[in-house]
Amino acid sequence: MIGRLIESRRPFPWGVLVFVLLGVALVVLAVLVRTYEVAVGACLPFLIALALGVRRERVLGFELTETAIEVHDPPQTIPYESLESLIALARPGDPDKKGPRHYPIDVVHENGTLHIPARLDVSSDKVFSFLLSTFSESGSSHVSAALRGYRDEQTATFGPERVWSYRARSNLGTRAPGRGMAMSLGILLAGIVWVVAGIVIKQEGWIIAGIGVGLLGGLLILVDRSQPSRPHSRRIKGWQKACLVISPVGIALSQGDLKGEMRWDELRDMKLKTPPHTFQYGHHPFGWGILLSFEGAQISIADIYDRPLPIIYRQMRDYWREP
Image (cartoon, rainbow, N blue to C red; front, side):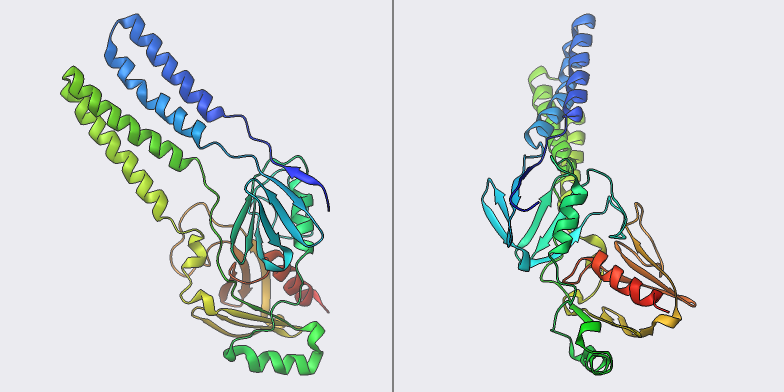
């Protein structure tokens, strides 16, 4: 992988094609029935298609060197030592399992997030595995005062090479831009066009419809912009102070309201799970995280630490499975 230029491939714009064909169909219908009102309605799919076309996924080119990710256009150098997490929700959480050939990868580093698109000219799993290998498994030496005593005690007993500690990373990362914003903008523009058209042709119905559609588009834009970058992790109060220590006998955790120590012989099950597609209520663990099941209780190790969850999961799993 080192020294090779890797480029993404733009997917075929199926959304643009569908909305263009829908707009053309409405124009043809307007000609057949000889009414301009249907043609005015065609503005909606045409403007959505235009917005989707303008906001198409850009081609990303980057090179993996000995020490950094070198991104082309715009030029950016991301040293491996600045990486804090890898998020690939479309692949199995277990790093030892094989993922699909193509999936998006978010590379969270100290200064932001690099969004690697799903379709590359190499296997996404090869890129993911290489980037995962650049992380040191030892974690961070900076431990909160609440867990320092536990870390020092375990280190004195088992040695520093068998005890790992992790701090909260500098940022949670951001979501990759999706098509939702483009569609919302197209709807908003169509509403404005309908209002203008209604005024010109003196049709109150188009004015009312345009106001309604414009408000809907504006509301969708506001909803999209108000979504937090990593909604599940942001629910954790004071996540910036989180800390985790892993040792041969168990873990110590300080994560929001979760504080305490747990032994491996108390653990009943461990899973690395992806975010749910629906909201969850009550005391159920949420989000992308390591779900630990104990007798009568469950806790979730959230994706807020300075190492990718697959690395932390593998270390915890290996200790848990030790005889």
